[in-house]
Structure formats: structure tokens, C-alpha cells
Length: 135
Image (spheres, one colour):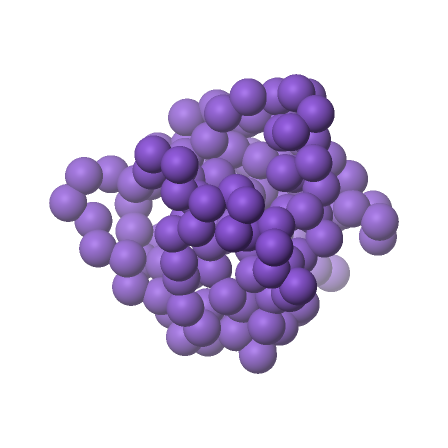
């Protein structure tokens, strides 16, 4: 049995008008896709705890998951929890090459212009533009 549920947590990190995005490594599901950092929620974990853990695993930083800003369901039935998150002061992003090829700070316009944007992230920006939530 898997240690993960059919739920995922995503860290939405904003600095001014720039969002922290990652390019997924070739070794993970949806390789070569651009998205926000995050991943599966383990059975005994809350979405907030998963957001914090995933940021440590993927980018080597400690974060504060401040509040859940949106929830969605992917076409394959994955429940996704989107968390407004901040990186604790003094942290340096060090991508884990097993999960992340690189990271970038991009504007919403730059992100949605990417042809390799993960579909769930495209839906996030559509919902944001439609006023379903605010950051």
C-alpha cells in the first residue's frame, strides 16, 4: 500500500509580482513540466505539513505555509491543496536534482505563456484571474 493519499499540496510563493516555479526533473511524474513546488500528501500528514516537507525535499528550504488559498481536483482525481507559503529568512534554495532540474522566479504572464506548464497550474492562474481567490 502506498504511503500517499490521492491528495497533493502545492506551495505558492510570491515575491512582488514573481512566483517561484520549478522545472520537474526527468525522474518524477510529469517530467519536464513547469509548476509550483509541491507533491503528494502522506497518509498521516496534513496539507500544511506536506507543503513544508515538500519544500525541504525539493528545494532544501524551510518555509511557513501561511494559509490554504484554493483547492482543486485534477482530471485524474487528485485533490490539490494550494498554500500561500513564504520561505523563512536566510534560506538559500538548493534544488534536489532527483526532483527538480531548476527553479525560476516568473510573472504570472510568463508562467501561463509556457507550453510545458503543468495543467493544474494553468487552472490555478485561470481561477486567480476569474477572482475565485486572491493571494
